[in-house]
Length: 346
Ligand SMILES: [Ca+2]
Image (tube, helix red, strand yellow):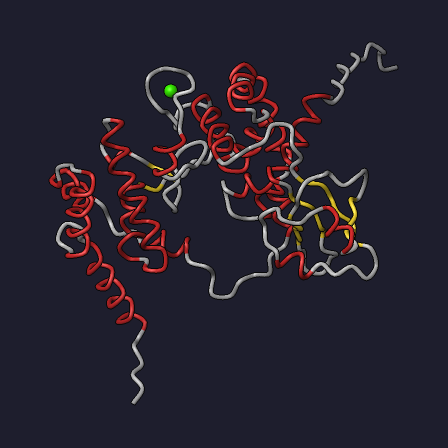
């Protein structure tokens, strides 16, 4: 027999289901988690229980993180247009001017050029403008306890948030960020803050919320820790000769494992210039109804994907970085001031 719930009743049942999630203070799994991380880190469980009691179940973050039921076709052109816009280029140039010394210092310390750091800041948060308004504790508790597909990841991040708050002398409930728990200008997850963040302005604390300095140093350190090679190629555009067979090369994945000879043999050429003497990954950037763009991603391209595991993301960082570097090298000519009209109307 089929039961049809009337919409009003269904809404009440959904609200009740949310209430059942709500109390992380009394839920068995949340309490066990608090005891477990206290034991593992040899810390007092009481503040963790107290913090979890203040975390609120936030169904919105589950809606946002869930893959959509019907996935719209991925479009590189649309993604690129959303990211490589005037706002991000102008904003990056302005930030570069304001923080030129810090960016130079980061380049000297970590070997990562300013335009790459800026492009990541631009794409992550529009240079600190969109760092997210989700309360991180509630976000991570919801994802850790009520989103089974990623529970392992987010339980780890929730634990990292408690340890981070302890180290920083902050209330765990005082952090805000994205719906996925990413924090501040560079959108580091709590575990990445603990591992890779640096106090780059030397004021004795990590601050990702009020300014660019610590974010600049931390992004550079992150990339360097993942193996950034100063001056090595990032990506070059590829051309496929007629009859080229990209499929097996694409299957090799995003790690750069393809020798130049293998690429040449498969009919892959650089769109201009010569093939760098380094291993590459073949990257396909698809747009429905348009020709696929092919690029060769080198080691540093792979390093950028450690920040966000998407070839669209890494390519957008690469292109925005190049646009910023070009614009900084050659600013557009200043408009001449309009000449005052002196001719009197007859
Ligand atoms: Ca600092």
